[in-house]
Length: 314
Image 1 (spheres, helix red, strand yellow):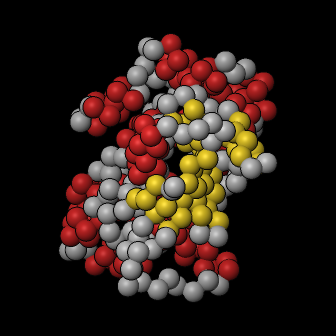
Image 2: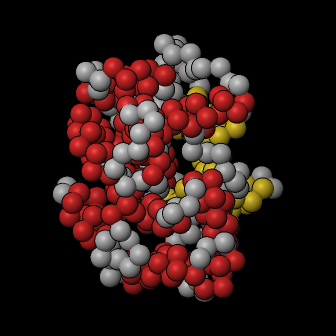
Image 3: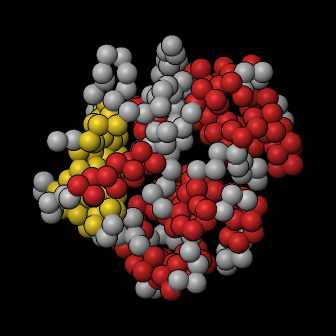
């Protein structure tokens, strides 16, 4: 029997999944109304397939868990927690809407993307590796390189005659060579950064998951910036993706600056300091507001290229 999950409304399952699941189907994909990804439950990789079964107008998600071995009840419970976190199902978007109510432009963006959630990485380590890969390159290129990394170092899972891959564990990447990282398309320097961070986690000299207990985000940024190759930009993305700190905005990010300027300062270029000051209007939801602006820009670009009609919003 599938798990049944009830997201905090409002929630648009299709919209929330499609914007971050356009990559390699052996790793993560949303297609024909089904989202799938390999998650690690304990030490075991499992393929989760999620679909909206709709219950009298309310979003209800059915989660099928596929594994080569029988699944115990405690594993089902852990898988439920992981899927809920991955898709940010508990997020209170009503509180977000209340906060931005005095900002008509952001309110308009939010209405166009009604029910959108910002996804989370399965682990803080995954968020760190992803953010290192994305340093100074486009998201599209970064996703392609990350897919190569996952398929080179990640554990394989065979389900119904198809091969899927789990995100590499720190031990997997700690043992990588410069040639292997370069074979994934990464620069030698990025390979060194990833390997160094993986070694620290694998050896126990850095506990990324324990950062969830630290409420002071500035302290986390300071700790992360002590790792070779990690600056404030990377650390802030780790806060957003790995720790789901939606009050964090990566103000130095070119995409974030461009997306804010497109809506609020058309034709202008804005600085990171301007972004931080301007984002105060969104309170504890700065990161989510920035995500909405980035996704709005993505869909606007898609509409221009493909002539797609504007989404209909309730």
